[in-house]
Image 1: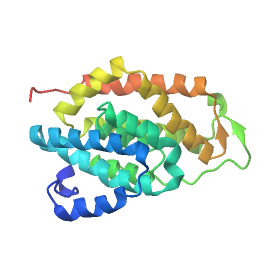
Image 2: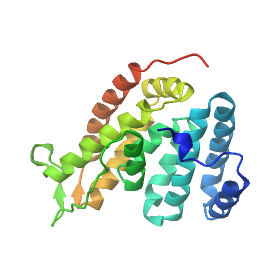
Image 3: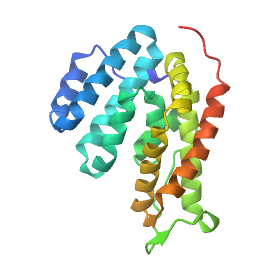
Image 4: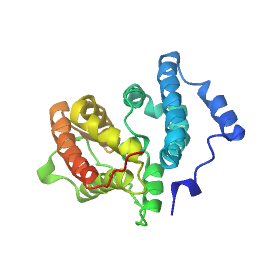
Length: 220
């Protein structure tokens, strides 16, 4: 199974017409990031078909995220990560925690059972990893699995090499993923401190990094 089976061609005028209509609804503060991201797509499509496919998959979901105001608190950080060239497959893995359709797509590629998650705490509680409800624990574990699969299955050599570099040098990604993590927890009626979230995410990223190091990266 390949991403190319599911992604519209980047040259498709129909896709760009649909996205152009949606992009009109993006606020001014995001436009420069979109421009930089579009330049990245053009670069990767010249170098590697896999990178192109991942960029287009992110583009499809990105439009949906932008048009749903629920995700507004995450967009600044998401666009910032795009501008810094964090790879599309990695960012898809990150966002899969809060947008279940992304998880479903990742699990199609990995031939894994899709997640059925509907838990919500009956009252507002503070995150406690020693007494975490089983559905929440399972959902977080599935998220980590999806994130690792997103960078390991049908991966782009270009994006993988850049991601390894960024994970070592750019600590801003910890804050972004912590924001996504806290967003997810708020949706299920759980609060978490910033320091606790960042500590958990730093640990998760070490696991992602280890998975990336195991991949064979060819020169392109």
